[in-house]
Length: 219
Image 1 (spheres, rainbow, N blue to C red):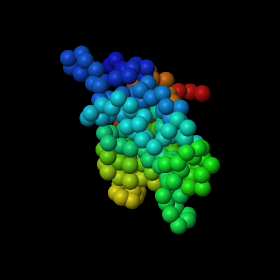
Image 2: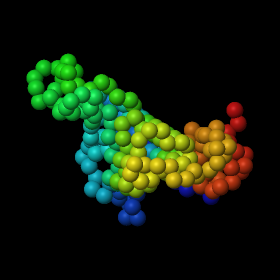
Image 3: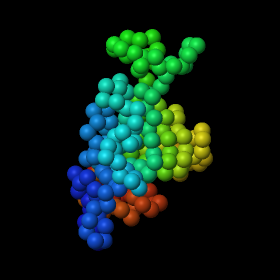
């Protein structure tokens, strides 16, 4: 049985029973035009009170002139209240004071001694579920298939197919063993054509890796 699926170019991909779009859910690749954010197709974010500016809502310290980037893969699921605290939020903390004098003075802030050095990119893999109110800190690297628990504060590298929770965020368990996770990353189902993905919905959402491998497109 086949089902109609949302157009990846749709801003509001969820249609309510009365035929109106759910304005609190957006495909981010359509909603965002920020020059420092890259988002893959079918990744969505939701908000109970839809913002006018999704980029500022999700990454309030990532400015068009920021040196770092925020990169998010395909088929990610971002719940209400998630924030990405990117590197431009940082202050210098290697000296006596952390006060950001550069933002209150005149001239080019980049030339001021209080300006911190550029920080790392933040990236999120594919098929990552980020729960309500989670906070992703500068330079976090979240692997494919990760689940981030509600309210977690995540920094550093999170291994693929793991579950991270708490503050500070810690890996509480692995969703699959290393061999299975490697097989899934090699399959990279999120890169398949959408009709092939939908045909394999039961296998993708189930636990039979052998069956999923049998459905993979042949090279």
